[in-house]
Length: 196
Image 1 (tube, rainbow, N blue to C red):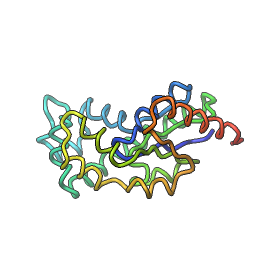
Image 2 (image 1 turned 90 degrees about the horizontal axis):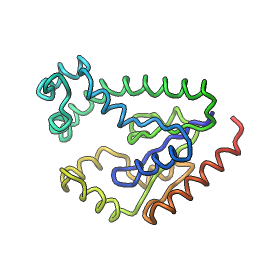
Image 3 (image 1 turned 120 degrees about the vertical axis):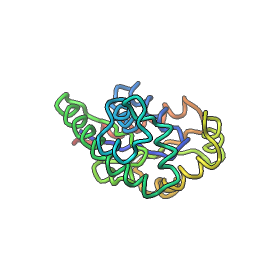
């Protein structure tokens, strides 16, 4: 089974690309969705203890948590140290289950693929990219997003140019859905030739 790591900076079209892999029948593990599930349930004790103001009605309020960690490197590092092992455990279970089920290719959709060293656990890397002006326009059109927030998120991410240098596959998203679909089809066809 081939494990493909999918990543891309904010606003590059990674979620759309992941959805297209699913549409082609490729199982996708979504790290962000996993984190959202963690926050939607009973808060992990360590998170609740470190960020008690973020717990509302027995659940993590993501807005409050974000406001506590986004501009504070130490707080963000502490949060990631608590959350990443949970995500890693879920990811490993996903890979194991898919392997048992006979999947030939799986995708790990991980925004911080390089930043968390998850890239070491994949067979190939696909980076989703778009020109900076397209990225900026997409991100600033989102609800509750502004220039400062965008800048702070970019500060935490490895630059797009560096990610692309480490990728075996690159998907350019500025030309629309059909172009992305065609590129994904080509990636799947290339991976299907590999006997693993």
